[in-house]
Image (cartoon, rainbow, N blue to C red; front, side):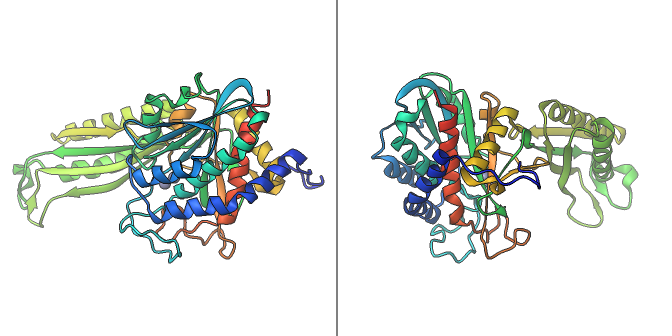
Length: 410
Ligand SMILES: [Zn+2]
Ligand SMILES: [Zn+2]
C-alpha cells in the first residue's frame, strides 16, 4: 500500500493497456450481464444461462466441456507457449426471491433474482476469456475458465471438481482466482486478504423428545421445553469456554419451536441454527461440542436428543502469496486506491473454498456500489433491491486477465 508521504505509484504500461482493453469490451460485458440478469436460474441446472455463456464465447479459440451432472461450462484457452495452467472462476446461479430494483433489465422470472451478482461474474469471466484470447501468444500455459452453477448452497464447485475441472487443461491447475461483486464497497475497489477470507457454514438441527402431558402437571410429563431452552444458553457458554478467544466462531440458534397451545406440554422441541468458523480445527471442535452439550443437557432432563449437523461449505482460505499477488495486480492495473487489504474476514461462506482446499489461489471482492448511493446505505448483496454499478465490471475483467498473464509469464 502507498504510505501517506509517498506519491502514488504509476501503473505499469502493459497493465494500463489491460484496463483499456477491458473497457473496450464493456458493451459485450453489459449485454451478457443484462441477458443473464433477465433470466435468473436457480441451483445446478441453468440451461438458459449456459446457452448465453456458450453464445458469448462461441467465436473464441477455446476448448469447451459441458458438465454432465450440472449445466457447468469449462473453457480452456491454450497459450502460445507451453506452461502450467491457471483457473479463473465465475459462478452462474441466482437466488429464490423476487426482484424489486425497478431496473430496465429486471428479472422476468417471478421468484428468481440475481441478487448476489453472479450475473456480473458470468459476464466478467466471458469478457476476460475474450481479452486473454487476443493475448494468447503472451501466455506460457493454459487458462481454465470455470463457469459454475449452484454456488448458493448447492456445492456446484464440488460437482465440477468431481468432473475434473482442475485437470481440464491436461494437468492440474497450479493457481486459482475468483472475484465476487460486492455492493457494500466503493465501485471498482478490490478487497482481499491473506489467509481466511470467508467462514465455514454448517447448519444444525436438534430435536429434544420428552413425554407430553397436561400443562398443570409437568411432573407427570417429561417436558422438552426447559431442556431446549437450557441448550440455547449452554451452547453460547460452550463457544466462549471451549473455543480459544483467538479463533473466531459463531453459533447462532436461529429457530426454536415447541408446542401448540398454553395448557399442553408437547412431546418434542426443536432447535435450528448455523455454525461459522475460520478453520477446520475449530469447525470440528464446535461440531463435536455442540453434540456433547445438547446430549448432556437432554440427559440431565431425562429427554432423548437427536443432533443432526448438515455440513456446508468449508472456510475459504487464501494463499498468502496469491492474495498479495491480487492486491499488487489491483494496484498496478487499477491504481493503488482501488486495492484494499481487508483487516478481517467476512463470516459468510463460498464454495470456491473447495477449489482453494486443493489449489493455492485467492478469492477477492470487487466493490460495485452505485455512485449515487453511500456505501453504508446501499442495499447489500442478497437484498431484493440490490443494484451493482456496471462501471465496476471492466476492473473485474482486467484483474481476471492480469492474474492469468502474471501467473503465466513464462
Ligand atoms: Zn450469495
Ligand atoms: Zn455469491
